[in-house]
Length: 199
Image (cartoon, rainbow, N blue to C red; front, side, top):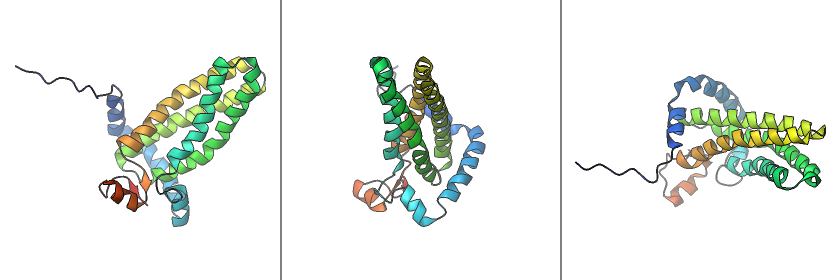
């Protein structure tokens, strides 16, 4: 009897995302986030500005590069730069913290158009990112008080949790095709009309 070889393209994290997508226990949290998201995009002009209006595709993934990039740069300097880099790492952590709110607002605008399975993933994504923010806010205050060792640990923890959040964001954007876009982009790329969130 022949057996089918395992799929070499399969990721061990696929099971994680499948469990999150199927977790009905997350629907209460998703509903609360959804109320805020619906209010945010209730004005069409505001919805367009926060979603795909400026670029033709979702603004949120572009915005995430700013806080994640700043925090990651701080983490790298923490472990490679030495004491001379402490002022720079504090500024980078602060920049990432400041950029978080506008980034989160664009993500909340995207949330409003998601289906139930995508909202579950997006809810865990949001929780992970908020934990990362909290750790980096604590890190900034620790650094400001010259407790740079604690600041390094807090930022490392933030990047661990935030890395999981970023993974889920990538799953939403690429795996689940959950992102607003100009309908003309969907037509020119050959995507089915229902894929993503036409805006």
